[in-house]
Length: 417
Image (cartoon, rainbow, N blue to C red; front, side):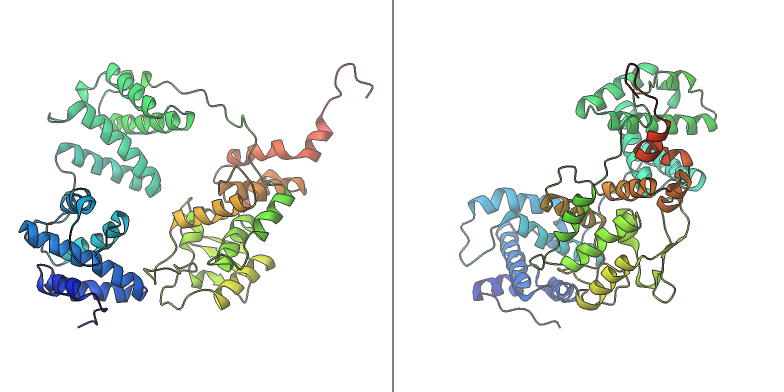
C-alpha cells in the first residue's frame, strides 16, 4: 500500500474512514506515479478529504459521483464552508485534485463513463469522420473542427427528429451561417465554416443526395490569396527572442531549444511536440520527422546551433524519465511530453519578453522562409524546407524578396530615374 502523506488528524479521519477510503491507495499511487511534489500531494489529499466529508454530510454514495457533483461541491459548499480543520478552499486547485478521483472510479467501473453521442446524428458524424480520414487524409485537428461545425448544423435542424438531408433547405444553411458569424464575425471563421459545410455537402453528394441548391448558397468570403505580407521577425528581434531565455526562467534550455527548432528548421509546434529521442541522428547530423502535417516522413539536416541547443537541454536540464519524447514536463505529472499548447506558450512568452506584439509561433517559420528568400534561395527551396505540399503555398514569400523585386521594379512616372 502506498505511503499516505501526513495530514491533520481531522482530515486523516475524513480520508481513511469516509466513503472514499477504499480508493485512497489508488489515488496516492497515481500521485507517486506522476512524481508530484510532497506539498502538492498533501494539498490534493486535503481536497479529497474535504470532498469525502461533504459526501458524508450529504449522504452521497460513491456510485452517484460525476462532474455535476463536483460542481455542486465547488459552487454550493466551498463559498459557505464552515468545516472545521485546515481544509482546502481554493476552487481551481480543488477541481484539479478531484478530477483524477473520477478517472480512478471510472477505471474501476464504480461510476459510469462519460456519455458519448448516440443516435442518427452521432452515426452520421462517425461516417463522415471515417470519410475525412480514409479518403481525404485530413489531420485530426481539421476533422475535429469540421465535425463540431457539422454537428451544430445537424442539431440545429434535426434535434429530436429523424435525420433526412432532403429536408435541409437553402434558408437553413443561410440562417446557420449567419448565426455562427454573429458569434465570431471574422474572415478566418467564415472560411472555416464554409470549408466545413462544402466538404460535408460534397460528401453527401457522393452518397447520392442532391445538394446543388445547398452548395449554391454558401458564398465565399472576401479573402484574397497572398493579400498580406507574412509576419517575420527582423534580425534584431530574433536576437532579443533568443536572449530572453535567461537562467531565471524555470526551463530556459528547453525553451531555447524549442525556439531554435522552429527558427532554424521551420518546425511546427505539433512537430516539436512529437519529436522522439530516436529521431535525432547525432552521428549523421539529421532529424527525422515521422508524423508531419503532410502525412509523410521527412529527414532534415540538423544545423550546428540547433544541435548544440538540443544537446544542452538533454544533458543539463531534461528530467530523468522513461518517456522517449524529446521535450518532457518538468512539473507534475512527470514522465509525459510537453503539450502543443505549452510549446505555443513558450514561444509567445519569449516574444512578450522581447517586446514583440505579434507573438504567434508561426512567425518563426515565416522568419526562416524570408531569410532563405533574401539570401538568394528560390521559392522551390522554401517549399522544400517548410515541407509545403503545394508550391503555391510558398509563393507569398516572393513578396518579401527585396533584391528580386528591386530588379523588376519600373521607375515611377515623372521620376529622374
